[in-house]
Length: 539
Image (cartoon, rainbow, N blue to C red; front, side):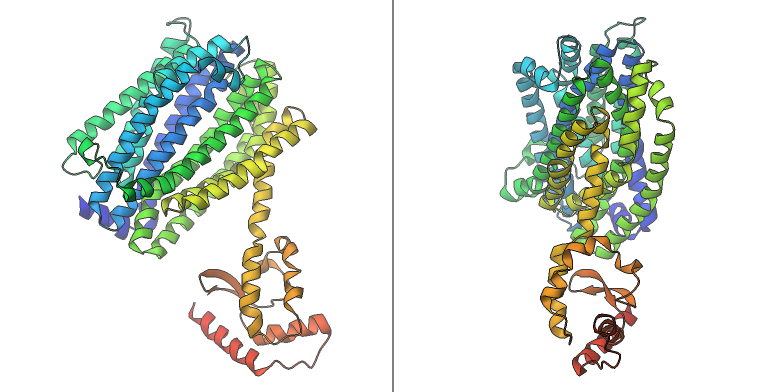
């Protein structure tokens, strides 16, 4: 078994390893989307906006589950994969047991708290007199009774995937999802039990229970060959276990809560425009989740490969994994975005044949789909941070995107373009974030202080730093003029664009700035230029 994992993580060609890990995860993610869409679709068949709005309004609570999922699923799986890379198998077992029992405890706690505070929770979600009862009926099954199985299902899938068993993790997840799709029409529609939104909640509850049973049986059958451990004797509150899981898990959980906050604000804004607008927003969000789940499937699938190789010191293989994923995922996202924009009306009508809802949904989806490529690349970046244990970096990234950019954009765009501006908040936030990523002022300052003392020139430090504010307007590899010959190279730990021949570039820079046609570089510049040429020829 250990040899199989070694082959997958260390020897299998990167494209094959990525696909072996990511494809089952993507498939299970898509099936999960389909089952979420099934709730919306079958509830929509009742042509009752109130019932459809109930499913939409309850969505932030179900997303809040992901805070616990991320805390103990992402946290424990990241630690497990890194421990596998170090061949520390006892830590793998203890971190998995810690993640399992903590997930169980918090799932039960979630149910108790939501039961006690149900009415305030409904008001917070944006439910009004029309949608209150339907939303409560849906929450009764999915949260009050179903929080623990819903959380354990996801956390155990994370842990099974962490040791490379991506296929089994996906089978467990998909078994529950497929059962949900089968049960939805039976419980929801008039020809069945005619339960409406509450029926969708009951189907979800039963499907999560079945998925949990699958994972329990799997771990029982493979108890001698798996590192995933739910034996209570292995549960430990040792400092290195708690910190190892929480260092990644807590930032991941907070990140998810930020997403919940954003969705709650979005739904509250939308609810002021009526049940039809809320229903259309819910349909749009579900449709938009298809490519998002593909991206998250890639991110979750490659996390064990990245964690393992990072911990084992094989950073080259780790980078190959990331670059291959980007080259595979990005073209797909662009095509999907274009398809969504062109077919927004048809996609919305497939879920509810209501002219007002179709009109709302068309405009919503066209706004959301434009931000898809940017958003999914950010998901991938966050996944990489989590995989290597950089939980704080992932959290900082999420705070910048959600709190600093997206939530203020929701308020501003709703003010400028009532209702329809809401769907463009993600796009605006991602465009601003992309601009900020290009304007890396800290790196500019660091490079200036390290390089300028070695260059003989009349251009001073203040002159260079004054240009920092406009750096985001330029792409060095595409810019005509100085530097005139470029190559990427490592400067310390930074992968940078540098002039190939410093001598020629200094001469031409002086010609450009000061019209000095006969400028002769100093001996120091000549020596440094020779060193750069030698270095770049090696790359």
